[in-house]
Image (cartoon, rainbow, N blue to C red; front, side, top):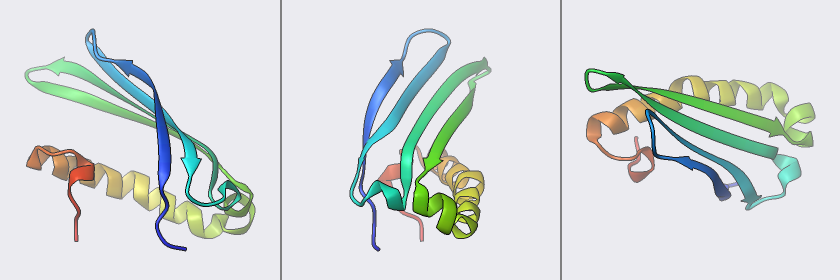
Length: 108
C-alpha cells in the first residue's frame, strides 16, 4: 500500500500559563478512510514541574474504520500498541537528547 499522507488541522494552541497545550485532528488522508481511520485526534500538554523539568502528557484518540476495526483488527492493534507504547516514547526521548523535533530525523 505504501506510505500514507495525513493532513492535520491544529485547533488548540495554548502557549500562556503554567501548562502549554497543542491539539490537532486529521482532516484528510491520501487513501480511502475506510481502510484506516474514521477519526484521529491528538493533544499534548507540557507542564512545568520545577527544577528545570517538565511533564509531557499525550492523549490520542483513534476511531478505526471498517476494514481496520473488523477485518484487520487482529493485525493492526498490536502494531498500534507497539507504536504508541514503545516507538513514539523512544523517538521523543531520542529527539530531546538530540535537541531536535522527532520529525526532523530518521532512525535506522
